Length: 323
Image (cartoon, rainbow, N blue to C red; front, side, top):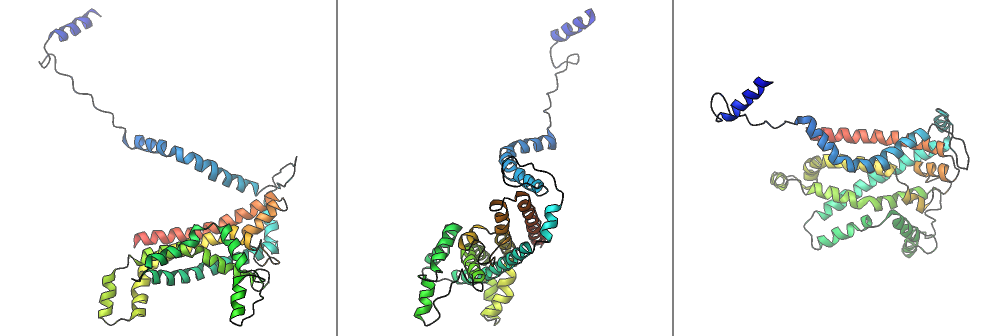
């Protein structure tokens, strides 16, 4: 102990920088490395992850688990695990398969017609016309309206007694007493038309943005080579729009397959189940008949179908990035 104190006292008495008392090397900062950065990143996104987990992940897990139970409406009901009984019943339920068929007709019908109408409108809005700004503003009107308001407005327009559509048909000599939403043969086409009108703004704006990225030099070069308007559209515009078309049609297909509010307010699935989409069918099972477990099983099947659509969408996006 005595020797240690003497060495320390001797170093303190010796000027720094000499051979017997070299200066201390500066302390090196601790390199936190990748692990520290990753932890900080998680801490930063944690406030956003908590509500996502609470309002998205937790209900999703609860819905999946509920699909394997016999949960029903009512007080003091004991919920028991029934395995795959709900799914077995679902596979044998003709009404469910009918709603699934109608859902596919609705989703593909709305998506295809919506794309064609939106592409034509986008091509028109891309021209250098007078009052183009006004036309673009009017094209966005349906986007600003909630689906419920759109449905109520179209119910009034399609009313068989005083609706303006039947009135216009009478004015030009056509049959003007069609019950568009109440007839078996016209209900589904009518709601598809309403769905196309309601969804056109988003598709139109997306395609218009894609059109404005198409090089004008290519069109000018093709015109000099003698290509007409159709040839320039087919060989230049459409290939350039391909990534946008794949993305917007896939997303539209997913959204339309999930539709609920618009068709519910228009027809509530009628007449006679002619417009009964899968989501309406699951809603009726849950909140009209109280079969929560059975309805949850339907929701799980819908999740699988939508996940298949999403898989194709993500794969197309990956291919677009690679190309």
